[in-house]
Length: 384
View 1 (cartoon, rainbow, N blue to C red):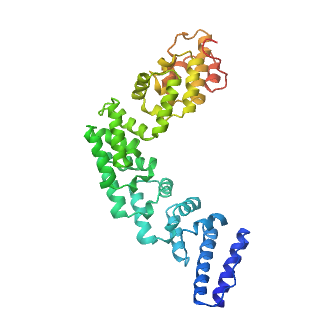
View 2: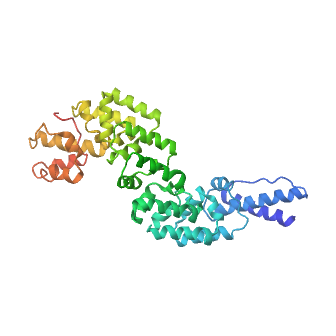
View 3: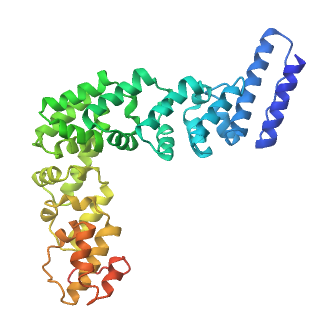
């Protein structure tokens, strides 16, 4: 009894000196229930002490994590940390993993963890990417044979290569956790019912797979909605539209429709814009209003004209639109380009094409275009 009590007090002192926090033990009688209480306190203190000393957690974090696990001996947690370090996990990686999924510390490092890490490493993950992937979801606690391998093998029937698989997993780390039979197969069957070709299904899995993990009924509803809007199932815009609709709640969808109406778009113009660029609905309301005001007030475009080029709402006003407009303003003021230039096309040009057309071509005649292009000149509006 005395030995247990002293051990508890030593751990309490260790925690107290590290964190500046104190534990207060109640006077305990020598009954059987008391021994159980002491044992529980002893293990809790050991858990907190270990999380602080071996994982670098502050006292408050260690206390919170200790509510989810109970470390009885340090042998296994030490082995887990040592294993992760051999695979290139930094202390930051290990701390993040344990904070999110504390039970990893109690897993068998050889039978449970190592086979999964080896499997993902065999796919071609770099050390840093592997660590980031494994701490982003509780993959290490999932069954390798029953969940991980069957799911990834199924996805590879569409995306074929490990390179594509890694690209998919890096952008959507939770994919491994969804059932092939209950989620993946039914949702892909829905796409096929609309005659979406496998090539487009493959692109959807690689580019924006999240909607494919929705509940079957929810996914069917979204696919039907997109089909009713008139999207061609053979086009790449069909899965893009599904992604966009899935990413906006019904309430936010209606609110953004109202924003576009308030900006001067008819319902038909909205539908045309959405079909041209489905991702426009993922733009925040604040950005939609800010950009439309700029296009109308500074570029003198009509809302109906902007509706034909909804890709403009995906661009950055500060980093792309204003610097390009400032550059074009310089060239127009010097008579180097016509004032009736199709400004929207210039804004939509990719970086290489825009610089070839307007920067390298004119920087000799108008050196200030470089300053304007870097965003160092105030844009006063076209025609100003």
